[in-house]
Length: 293
Image (cartoon, rainbow, N blue to C red; front, side, top):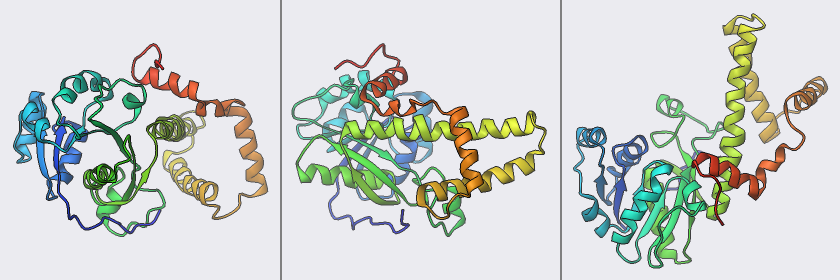
């Protein structure tokens, strides 16, 4: 990933409603939107969330007033709340408006209330790449993205209208800024990426590395500073070699890697990429018995 932000000059402005503006993600996207020329309505129902919005110096708007005027409604609410929230909100939206959720699970599972004249879209941040060329302390500190470190974003929209896609892209670039590229996929493909590729696999491996560090310290008795240093350095080498081919693994390392696969990885692990396994995974995440098709 390059570190050159490709944000086009903002020529068109839109009316954006942020639902859940006082939540963790809602505050993140609102902090970025306030820096734009878009007209933004901030909606929050939870008392603690309302306090956070007002403490940030942003005015709250009633739900009905906000969504009635919005070109795009950003649902910065938990996945489990999207079904009842969209059931309340979508009927109030103007024709041609866009529903933008920030995670694909509920959209893929068919849990969102829809209308023929309201467009469904999903977007998710990629987060700053491990290979990003950071140059400032702020960029180094921004591991999540949306503050200082450039990142890519993934987006999907159920419309062939270039004007609607442009509204989504402008909003995505605003809420996840600074953004390098916006990659367009289908909603299903976005669900295959998140959770399968990045949560089921990448985040699981991250947690496994932490468990491995604990075992080296607590079971093997290695001093923590020594174990942490060698793990962090070798993790960078492993990712650079594995994902970019920077340097070939040594023959001895390849033998140890094979032993690790045989001892830790199931032979059928790639089944997680099948559609039926994706459905099982998302059903568990959404607390459903099954994904209905």
